[in-house]
Structure formats: structure tokens, C-alpha cells
Amino acid sequence: MQGNTYNLKFKVKSLSAFNYVKAWIDYNNDSTFNNTNELVLQLSNVSQGFYNQNITIPTTATSGIKRMRIRMNSGYNFTNACDTTTIGQTVDYTVNIGGINDVGVDSIISPTNVVNIGDVIYPTIKIHNFGNTTISNFPLCYTINNGTGIFDTYTGTGIVPGNTAYFTFTTPYNVIPSSFYICTNVQAANDVYAANDIKCKSVAINLAANDVGVTQIMLPLDTIINNSTSKVKVVLQNFGTNPIFLDTLYYQIGSQPIVKEIWTGYLAPVGTIGDSIQYTFNTTFVAPAGVTLNLCSWSTLANDQYAGNDKTCKLVNLCQLPLTPGAITNVTSPGTHTVYFGSIVIFCINNVNSATSFNWICTNPGAVIIGYPNDSCVFIQFNNIGASGNYFLSVQAINSCGIGQSSPNYNLYVTSPGGGIKELNASNNIKLSPNPTSDKLNINIASVKKGKTKFSIYNIQGAKLYNQEDLITTDTYNKIINVGTLKAGIYFIKIENDDGVYNTKFIKE
Image (spheres, rainbow, N blue to C red):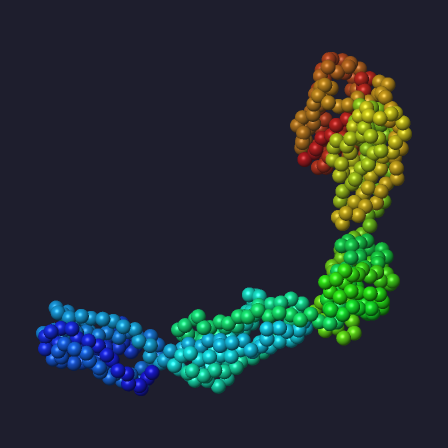
């Protein structure tokens, strides 16, 4: 401490009677020992033995860690701290000027070992000054369950060495229905011993006698349709030790008027069978226009001791109901409701603007959707499974929320072929190239029957965009169609001759 005098004890081991001892303290921390104001001890002609010498720290010395050097030389005197000596010793030490800062938490006064649910606790600690300097204006902190630190500052009367003081944090902790672990610590500047800075304790919870809350909104579901009528169904949970027979429940859509209803029944104490029930409000609501709605529901039990679990909220998605799809059309053979086992037939509906996907359903057991079942047009292969007879085809237009509307049924009569439609596969020897294409589509037909052959192109809405009949007089045939003017997308091509009808698709880039 500045201005104080301290006793420096050392031992000289040399047998000579002509030993010289000097000591310096680097008060300004410039890594140089000067003889003007940093030389604190000099002795001449000392012999072997123990020595006690007083050193006075100047009042002008700055606080902090300093370096002290003690040198001894035998036989002749020396001048500076760094002079060369032949017989002697040099030792450096660290001294702390200004005292030792060591402040710690002695104990946690509040909370006690057991608290009640819903209590508002301002943590209080007992601070102990273990150092030798008076200290104040230092930061403190507390955490709950090792969470985010809550910081404060001790600005009270300086705590003198060896004394204690009490501090209450200004930010409270609201006790929830769960035991917790609290830690407090002090963070004084230049504190030399961290082990006593922190103190922790576990705190148990007394359950409230009366404590009820809404824990879940079961209805409406996560997504509902605009302008649809919906019910509100919630879960009411008893967190308290008393049974409950009467409660007031509420719900509110956004900033709309609050709906209030009275529940009566039996809600068992927490931890027993029947400590939660499902309640459906009698008052329904009409979903507003928009994208989402915020729905909150809560309880206001008389004498409820903890409000933190009374309320729950839910964000509900709102969707526009997709338009009902129009009639299904048979693109392969327009106007025809008869299809044949072994055939592949293209069916389409007009696209629905609000739909993002389509779900096709055919009641014929042998029907297999073999191309793009989520599109507004599909290929359906009718395998020879089941008996000939009447079936139907339908499609559901589904929006981005997963909600759909179904088309009118398309009646089908599935039967055995009588020279009818044939499936397009490798044995037909019909190849399209390139596919996808950006300009010209090359159609190569091998082993084709001679005679008239019709080529037709349809878009996915079923509109015919190209129709031409060619007379084939050779066993193989190659045809090039210019599709450069078509918009990018999926198209269907139908090839018809006396041998049958062939369908496939190509992509225009």
C-alpha cells in the first residue's frame, strides 16, 4: 500500500565480510531500474547472516503489479541493477502495490431452499471482502439453470477488508412450475482469487393450491379455409393441488372481440388421472380473409396463484379453397369413354389457377398412372386386370395448403381390344429425337404399316395444336415437325394409322 513501510527479510550466504546488497522496485513499469527513485535498499560490507530492512512505498507510486530486483555481489561494490558481477546473485520478485483485491459471494440469502410457484424473487447475496483493500463499484451477476446472465452493479458503501455486505439484484425472477438452480458471482477488477467469486444452490418448488391453464389449442387445425366456420377446442390443465369444479375460459382471434364461456365439471389435482380435460367452445368463428390468423385461449381461475401458464396461442394458416376442376377430357380419343385393356390413354382437365398439384383416381383395378400424376394431364395404362365393365376417373385439384376440390366423375367402359388402341413401347419402333427439343422434333418409325398415318400434337390442356395426315409408302418413315413456335412446356403427340393409335409426350424447351 502506498505510504506504508514493510520489512524486507533476506539472507547472505557468502563467507566474505565485504558483500554489497541493493534492491530496486520498477514503480513505473518501464522495465528499467533507475537509481534516482527506484533504488529502495543499499548495504555495504555485510557479512554472512540474516537481515531485516525496512522499505517505504512512496505515496506517489501507482497501484498494480511491479517487479522488484535484489542483487548481491562479493568483494567489490556495483552501481546499477544490470551491472556485470562475478561473485554474487540476482533475484527478481513480483510485488502488488495498492493492496489485494479479493471479493467473493459468502452465501445466497434469497431465494431460500424452497419457494412457491408464482413467487417473484429478487435474489439477495452476502458479499465478503477477503482482500486487504476497501472495494466498491463492481459488477455482479446471477443465472437460473445456467441460462443468460442477469447483471447488476454494487454501488453501496465501500466494503472494508474482512467485512461483509448484502446486495439485492434489481431484476427479479418469476418462479415457474419447476425446481431450479441459481448461481451468483461477483466480478471485481483485478480480483486475485476466483474460487470464492461464485456461489450456487438448488431451489425446490411448492406446487400452488390453485393453478389452472390452457396448454394446447386442438381446433382449429394448423390450416383452415378462408370464410369457413371453425370450432375452438382446447386442453385445460390443472397444475395445482386442489380439484377444480368451475373456471372461466376465453379465446380471441387477432384483435377481434373476446369470446368468454364458463366451464363446469371436475378437474383432478395435478399428477392424478383426470388432471386435464378437452373443452370445445360453443361459439364458433368464421375464418377471415388473409394468410394467417393468431388465435389465443386462456383461463382466469379464481385465486389462481400463477399466471405464467394460463394462456397459449397458435398461428393458423389460411388458404383459399381451390376452384372445382372442370370436366375430364380424353385427349387420345376425344369424346370416347371406351378404353381397352393394354392401352395407354391421355386424360386432361383445364388447369386450376389456385391448384399446385393434382391427385388422379381411377376405380379400375388395372389402371396405372405412368406419367406425371401431379399434373393436369396424365398417361394411364389399363392393364388386363379385373373384368370388363363400367368404372370412373376423377381428379382432385390441391392447393399449397394441401386442401383440394374434386372434379365430376368421368365414366369409363374398360374392355378387351378389338383392333383398338395399342400401347406405345419399344416394340412399336417409334422414336422421338431430340427430346427435349427447342426447334425441330424428329419422328422415326420403323416397320410401319403402309397407308395413311395421322400426326397430332396437343398441349396439356388438351387443345390440338398440330394435325397432319401423311401417306406412307415405305416400310420405314421419318418425319420432322417444326415446334419452334410452341411455348416451353409438356406436349403430347398422337400417331394414328390402321395399325392402331400411339401416344407419347415430348418437352419443348
